[in-house]
Length: 247
Image (cartoon, rainbow, N blue to C red):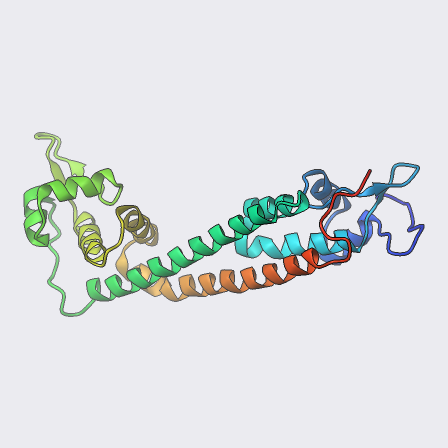
C-alpha cells in the first residue's frame, strides 16, 4: 500500500478509495492506468494523489458494471474521461437497446411457449420426419426451412444413407416456435437467439419454468442502469468534472 498521507484538504490515497468499495489498492491503481479513473497528480515522491473527483469516478464505474458489463462500463468511463460525452452516451444507448431487445425476446418466448405447452396442442410424434413432412405440418415451403437452417434457427441431422435432412422431435418443436415468432414479425437473427435460449433450457417446458427468473434478471439490469446513470451524472456534475489532471 502507498503510505503517503493526505498533505492538503481533499487529497485521498489509493487505500482510501479502495476501502470504500472493498477493493485492493492495486485495483485502484489499475483503474487509473486503464483510463477508468482520470489521471491522478503525483506527490514529489511519486505517490498518487486522488481527489473527490476520482472517488466519484470510481463510484460511477462500479455502478455501471451491473447494468452495462465490465467492457461497456470501461468504454463509457474512458470516453467521459477523454471529454467525449457523446461517445459515452452512444455506448449507454446501445446497452439500453440490447435490454429492450431482450425484453421483446422474453415477451415473444412467453407467448410462444404458452402455445407450445398448451393442453390443446396436438401430440408430437417421437419419430424423425423429412423436410417435406415438416414443411407440410407448418404450411411453409422446404426452401423456408433451409433458410432457417442457414440462419442458425434449425439444426437438422442428415440421414446416413441418403444425406437428406431429418428433423427430430426437438427440431419440430424449434420449427414450430420459429414459425410462431416469424408470423409475429421477428427477424431471423432474433429468432435464432430465442431458439438458443430454448436449447440451453432443455426445451419449452423447462424454459417456461425459468421465464420468471429471466424477467427478474432483466428488471435487475434495468434498475442497475438507473443507478449507474445516477452515479455517472454525479461524476459529470462534480466540481472539476472529468478532465485530465497533470501528472
